Image (cartoon, rainbow over all chains, first blue to last red; front, side):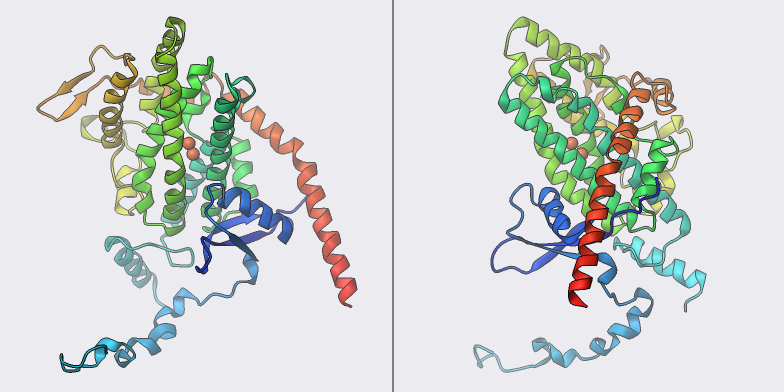
Length: 95
Length: 320
Ligand SMILES: [Fe+2]
Ligand SMILES: [Fe+2]
């Protein structure tokens, strides 16, 4: 057989109105329309979602795990970005 | 870039702290290979496992049972897909994996090489085979490889319906006519030992025959030995058989107060190895059916790809 594999798609499902789409898995499909249909049949057979996104897997740009430390370093030492960094008297309410 | 030792240390640091390895992380080559083999074998089992039950869809005794069976078999196809997708994150393609199945270079669970002779077999498969599968799969939801663990979470959620519908179907038979009850007992008689064999060969105590258990435990792929899981399954299933009013075909089955477990007769492991090697009642038929379905479906895959290519070309000319 000479035909190449159908491309891979990443599937994102919104479980309920008010929630973000979450990655649930992937599948192969010849085009976007079929990817959405297949995603419905595979990932929402029990009412798991109200909306589906599909994205070609090769269109995703990821941060590399090799540069993990350096890449996420800037956040590491900035504890003052968290509210717990600040000490305020107990009498001061609603802070 | 970190050296090999440093990378291996980073890998074991994650595994030892019960963390998860993700697709682009460094991992030992043997870990990757073991996972590909295990996940692929698991995926193959899901899709080959559609056949014994699929055999009864057109002959289900009621529309209700038919709808349930269709939904279950469809779920198994979905399980295959989740698992193939997890294996693909390790750098193999779906086509490669199917090729390995079709040429018998990768295996699937031996249980699916037994025939479904009566309608009661469908109930027995749901109760026992899916029950054994759940016992095996629940610990895999905490497996060290992220995509595999996530696929197992999804699968386990769906499996509980499979087991319950099987139990309910058998219960209906055991509460029916004498002939129906006899059919249910006959199904249990035939499926009991092959179900016990699903946990694999003994891997604890004196009977250990090599195997991968120790290494897989070190890697956080396996959490319990085959023997522990088999015992867990027996302990869970015996009381259920009493509710059904059926007799497990093992004269030596009895509760052991000292151990706090049931004592039981081990399955015939020589038979297990024979069936794995290809000499089971249905091996040839299952594989031939799989290959035929793949070959006869080729034109559909090709037509869909051709249509997609045509649509793409059209959008490109319109945009130009
Ligand atoms: Fe399954
Ligand atoms: Fe199942």
